[in-house]
Amino acid sequence: MNYSPAPDLLKDRVILVTGAGQGIGKSAALSYAQHGATLLLLGRNQKRLDAVYDEIVDKGFPEPMSLKLDLAKADDKQFEAMAQAISEQLGRLDGILHNAARFEGLIPLELQALEPWLNILRVNLAAPIALTRACWPLLTRAPDASVVFTSETHGHAPAAFWNAFAVSKSALETTVKIWADELAPYPNLRINGIVPGPVRSPQRLISHPAENRDQLASIESLMPLYLYLMGADSRGQNGRVFEAQAENLL
Ligand SMILES: NC(=O)c1ccc[n+]([C@@H]2O[C@H](COP(=O)([O-])OP(=O)(O)OC[C@H]3O[C@@H](n4cnc5c(N)ncnc54)[C@H](OP(=O)(O)O)[C@@H]3O)[C@@H](O)[C@H]2O)c1
Image (cartoon, rainbow, N blue to C red; front, side, top):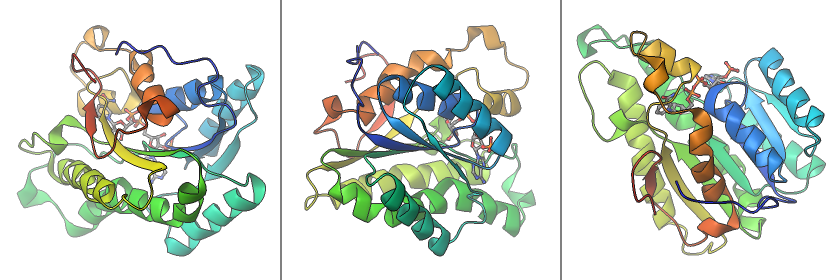
């Protein structure tokens, strides 16, 4: 994407990134911090969160906060307690990047048991919605807030064996459209989606173990779009799902 963010694009903003411990979430957190944001780093793995925390501090970016939370288990009460803690400790929330995802491999529908199916839907779909809802009072108070959900190509181009993962991403894209349509009372808030396309990340190694990783785009090449959608330059964009590696993106 041909976009040059201002160095202080996200100055004074507080941004929550889920799945911030590795892959795309880690890069987005570092890019947001580099552009002035205070980060809330959410993930399950404390060691990975600590490493991202240290990298942000070592680079002299605003000191972030870690939120260890398993999206497969969190309930409304935990999400609300988290939002309350953000309100008390930082006083604001200007954006959420819903990036965390559960992928358990490809499987035919006839073999899909109920509990693993529900777990995937819980992490990829229900938790991002519940988390956004818990943060709603903060987001609607922010002067310019942005919520970004992460989809995947099979969310709109389903194919055999992608199963609950594709269903969860498809439903996320639908959620983007529905929620964006409900935002008329909140002109300060926008909700969009990103389809990153194939990039060299840990998850991609699991979903496509045999492919030549040298031919994949780098995670860093996606960051202009991630920055654009989180900053004020994307005001007015609402209810869209952006294919990060498409030509003529805007
Ligand atoms: N990579 C690609 O080519 C590609 C293509 C299209 C779409 N995407 C989408 O882009 C996003 C990021 O992909 P990625 O490849 O960077 O993924 P990744 O390397 O597997 O990272 C996923 C992150 O999600 C977190 N996570 C998973 N389950 C969680 C749970 N129950 N609670 C809290 N956090 C949880 C993990 O946290 P821990 O580290 O704490 O375990 C991890 O940091 C995903 O939504 C993915 O579907 C990726």
